[in-house]
Image 1 (tube, one colour):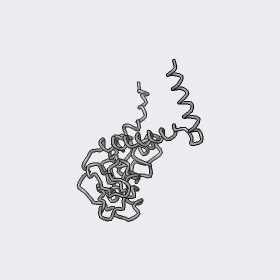
Image 2: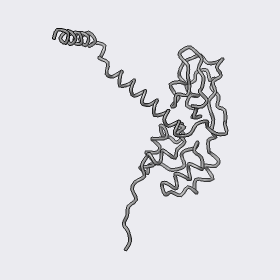
Image 3: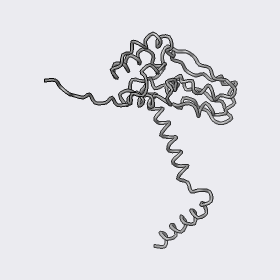
Image 4: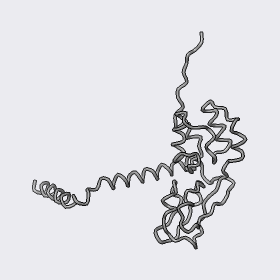
Length: 196
């Protein structure tokens, strides 16, 4: 008697766990998680993660039961070596555009002040380079990234949560035209409670 057991679908979490979490977008998706979700739906190929290289390609192939050998030669040639951003601080004008672009908040600084990269936190995604108006960011190739994928994933998720929180707070404020009514209403509620 043959078994008709159906394998459960692969979850995006299982796929995301195999990705390097550089959040670079080189795969054509907005980060590692969206790529994992596309793979889970069978809407993407397993050879799109250039920072992951052949190791990630083989691991994805094994997990998703897809043959990675057809992509191995090309992946060997196109694998993106690990790197980290370095800001030439003397040339930095403090525009904060690199800070806004960094998916893991690896750049610190403030408006009109010099910025610097926290080396341990940089994934080497290169997303900070295009928005820099003075072209003062270089990439340095390294042997390996200083932190693991889980560390980078947590920083990426924390940034997204913070941005969503700020967006929610901005939407919860009363419209400018309603501020007077909002304040009068709040004052009336306060006076009602006070007089009880």
